[in-house]
Figure 1: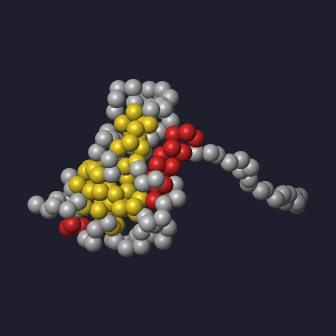
Figure 2 (figure 1 turned 90 degrees about the vertical axis):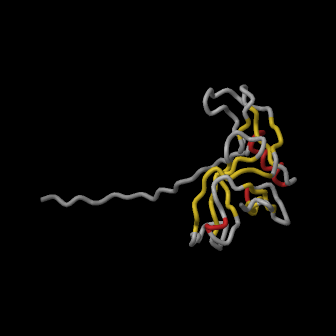
Figure 3 (figure 1 turned 30 degrees about the horizontal axis):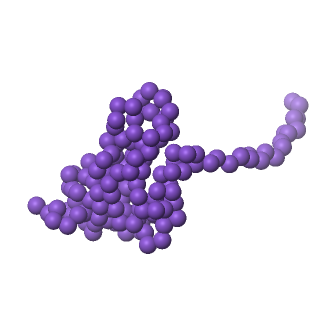
Length: 151
C-alpha cells in the first residue's frame, strides 16, 4: 500500500473592500444622529421604515425620504428575560415590532419595561434617545410606553 503525503497550504480569507451606507441608509443614520426618523415613500404613497433603496415588491429605486413621528404602536412583541451577551440591552426587556406614526411598516426595537405585564399589543410607545447620538441605530436606546396608555 502506497503512502501519500498530505498536502496543505495556508488560506487567508479576506474582504479587501468597504461598503458605504449609500444615500438612503446614510440619510436614515444621519437623521438618527439628529434625533429624527426618516422613512422612504413608495410609488403607492406608503412609507417604509427603516427605508430601503428599492421597493421590496417592484424592485423600483426609491429616493423620496420623509420624516415620520417618534411615537407609534406595538404591533407584536416578545419578552427577553435573559439578554444574550451580544445584546445591546443588559436587563430584561421586550423586543417589539413598532409601527411609527406616519409609517406603513414596523421597525424592530426594544421596549424598555420592567416586566411583560407592562406591555400589550397595541400599546402606544415613544422613542427614548441616547444622550449622545452618533448616526447609528443604537442612537435609539429603546421605546417607552406613553403616559396615559394604561387601561
